[in-house]
Length: 400
Ligand SMILES: C[S@@+](CC[C@H](N)C(=O)[O-])C[C@H]1O[C@@H](n2cnc3c(N)ncnc32)[C@H](O)[C@@H]1O
Image 1 (tube, rainbow, N blue to C red):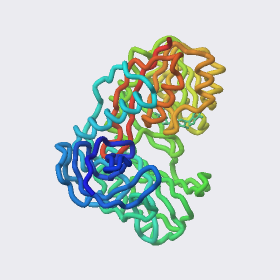
Image 2 (image 1 turned 30 degrees about the vertical axis):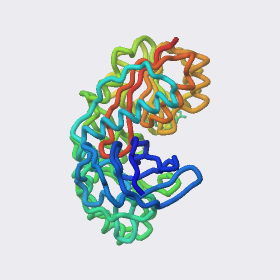
Image 3 (image 1 turned 180 degrees about the vertical axis):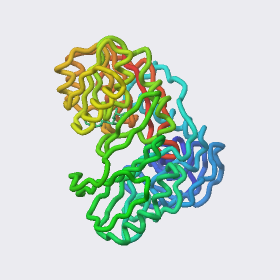
Image 4 (image 1 turned 30 degrees about the horizontal axis):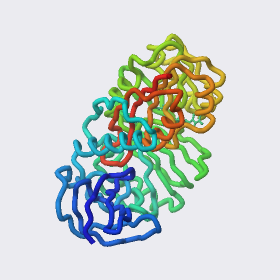
């Protein structure tokens, strides 16, 4: 069957329509391309197709750099040029804001991006019987990865040791590795039991964890230090870390701009990545996160950078209800703001919101939920995840 691809949708799939009008999702197909496909899977509402031939090629198409690309589930957009990825991600962001968010008169500010390779400094390697890598596309089978061009070379260089570790310790399920650039150190979270270790010399700490997330043991140091925009941070193994170190400075400058005014309440502060800079612009800062280990790091990091601010382990909704603020700064996980947070915002109505989002679908849902109370003024793509379908953006909502 031949179809024309209309657009790229979240997840990095091309979307077209069959002759009878049914939606067909086609991995690796790009908008404007005519492709010959074979139907792989059918549901009532839509089908999935596999490309057999590209009849007309998009000018955004390029050759992937990674030898594992079409098998490994880690990346979805390596077949698109760097400029093409940005263009497609911007159109997904806008389409979500228009269709789900029901807004169309906002400004799309120019995208923020850097070199798209070797940027990733935290990775979750899956391991099994001497293999190490990532899950295959749409499967829980492991791709034994020899190269990963989006990983920092220091993490890629760890792969032979992880393979050996997995061979000697068959109970090992995952190895989560964080590279601390500058210090040139690595800390590891190992999931599953491990008897024999012998880590490379730049590994400063190893935590052994149960699959439930409970830490059983720590050997060495469970944290490392990073610098961004001239500030220093201690980042523990259990605190969130923005994984694209090449974007850190620009990300902070984009998110913490002139809209930060008066009394600032920050939810989802993690280890205080933005807090240091929010505090410098704000009259006062109150930061919070549900993860008490991250809150400990954030407190330490504010002190380390000579900043006075309150940091508390609180759920977002509790923080909004208990702290008076003019500017609300949020950076929720992929699920977006929860119902309690939305209800609390509508009740307390801070004057403005900076919403740092890693998922345009939940961002748009939340923008829609806040309609009538806030107006989206601008949105800006921050390319934190080149070659993958993930879309980060900074958004400014003004109180009505
Ligand atoms: C995307 S991370 C951002 C962290 C931080 N802003 C940064 O840039 O490093 C999201 C954070 O939200 C926190 N979180 C998740 N659910 C929460 C909730 N209901 N209330 C408060 N914080 C929550 C997580 O612990 C995590 O630190």
